[in-house]
Image (cartoon, rainbow, N blue to C red; front, side, top):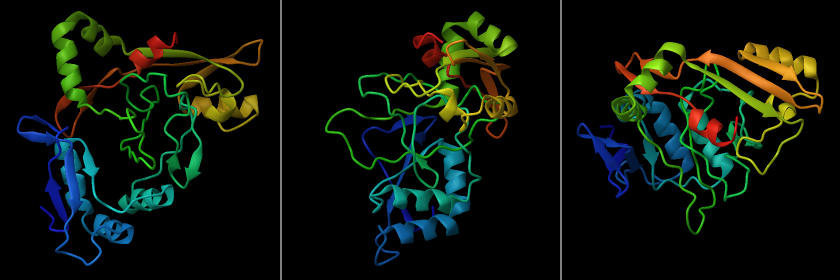
Length: 257
């Protein structure tokens, strides 16, 4: 592996087909006097991009531990170092605030609200291909963001509910949700239509929604019903030659969408 990183183990790791999930990288103190610094990390990411992309493709997730990334500004520098195309957060459901650059708050609903397993913007025709997570202030308890391998989820659900999965593969999903005018911070999917489409103009919202494959039906109370689909619920990962579960259906159903 690249000698700028040390691949380490943590108790929460799992192993599938002899591959650790996630892979965990820490600083290698022998390669630099300041191996933990943000500047050293960003330069290493740029020079070792091919290695990191290969590791991500192999394991599905990469966790960086032990680096001096303390602020949203630090995190943004790390994200930018990867050079991925930016994905604007237009059409998403979670109430979020842009902190700096590409960094947004994760979800501003109360901590007692449960967020079900889902794929980011699975209802969009072209969802983001990579996601980054960062914790600036760790809670005293709870607050974890669990991650799972989608092909494992697909295999287990197909084994237990074969007929249901067959219908999903054949027909896909239609997502329907009522949006109020302004954000409802009591709900994890309570983003209002104004912030969802970054406008206060209904005609502009309709144009932006159409580009995302979303149909809007305006309500008398200034709210709107957004309808998307059908979109695939099961996708085929061509690079890894396997099917993956790719939906937000559990979360939408729980919220009465």
